[in-house]
Length: 269
Length: 277
Image (spheres, each protein chain N blue to C red):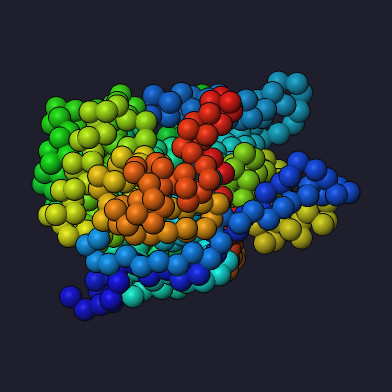
């Protein structure tokens, strides 16, 4: 049984186009995912590459039971994501680009709160939280400090600890190293490798960091404007698009370069 | 462990987790809570001093009775505000912190999540209401020797079931409108109390408002608490207040859960769970 099975999955949103029709604001349909299909085997790490707005986060949110789909289906270890949400939620956890914690609470308090939702008692977390924080390299003397006083890299380590604490079989990583300094980025990447090796977790990594995808994933997919253009090992991807680098392959597949995105972001700022 | 027992255990641990998190937050924001409490005391005093003001300007009233009537109304107003505020934070605070997606993707049923918030709201609200009553009463020379505080507390707790049900309905508003949803909760609080005789008998209201007061749990809570504190009425004499409160509670909690469920589905359909809306 595949860890993740996605078939013809579709999701659209309705967004205001800024115009009015009578008294009502006009809304247009925006297709975030246009019927994508793929499978991930147990223990595999798959990276999905795509620019901002390509549908990566929508995919992660759908698989996390945080969005309802508009068509197709998705299963996680045989459980229907949209009908068996409770069973799916027990198997999945997630780390996203924003660490997202109660900022006045400490790392230990935030982890305790998260652990209770997964049925862990205070007796269980008393030992487990310090152990897991130590494992991600979090300094013991800062466990009682409010999250708002911690660096981004430190917060992201706590986010990884939160995900690992609940022993997920499927880990959804949505740009987990975006915004981190190079050293923190490498530490987080090392930890992701370790999670895979020691905990036999299946990983879906959505990123726009080409090096990260190449370094961590068994297969890399290219998601562009809601379409999954390909999903294969990096070597096959390069061969298919006759490219020397992943960036060239991405450009050949989408007609867009990552540099374009950076420029657009700068212009928006 | 049998399946049902394991699920129940899991749910109870989750419920305790919601309560525990709120305790952490109170500890972390304790001075803000103290400041907010002082504001509530000041606000309550502005209302309760009205009785003495009427007497001072020549009005013929039973000052003690009116003072206590106003005090009970102000305390229930403050209590209801806290209940609605905490339940609304189920969504609003988590959305602001960005934790909402992690909480809503966790394997805890939404009713238990909401009951956890409700349980904390009642405990926190009751402690605060008792303190508020005690502190404000110190400003007045009230004879409370006949007051039946235990009966008043029981009435408040029974009414709280209905308040929690209504609070669940207001809790969903920040999901639908992240910008204005929280404020709409205050509107619900005001509307509920204005028809319930918060500082006056419901008989002074227009007839159509009196009809609405019949289905408001606050009407019976205010009546029962005043009977207990002013006249020393016991719980056995409060059938007229308790039965309607039980019936409204039985209706409002499932209704609140259903409203929240629909709101959550709407948010998941339209992608409104995420922090940026």
